[in-house]
Amino acid sequence: MTANQISDYKAIGQTVQHYLDGAKNGKGALMKPAFHKDAAIYGYVGPDLWAGPIQTLFDWTDKTGPAPDIVGKVVTIDIAGTIASVRVESDNWAGYRFSDFFTVLKVDGEWKIINKVFHLHA
Image (cartoon, rainbow, N blue to C red; front, side):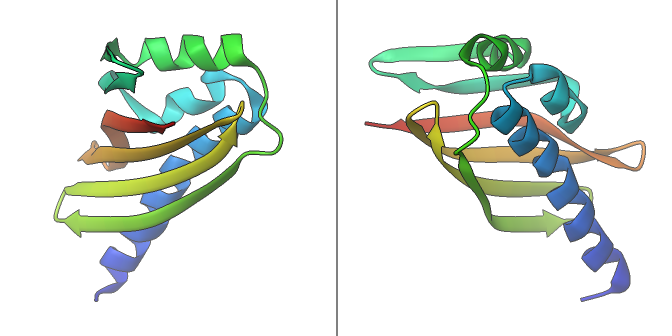
């Protein structure tokens, strides 16, 4: 592993931390720096597919409000050049448990989430 790779792991971790901070504080604006402007979200809420622009996540976060007891953990980061995949497990986000997979791309030297796919645990 090279020094560049180590710094990329740290940078991706910092990117994902914006997401977790936004969840904890109930503020989509805190999440926004983690995501590419054209990012999308996909997952099921019950039998219904939730799919669309990432702004829907920011809006839901604002509506749901703070989750001070959320426990979030980056489980894996897998990097190949300028792309990465990240798995995050979150528990007690407004009473919900989520598994998230993020597709991350290095854009203009910054790691940005371009896609979030989630599983909402029953």
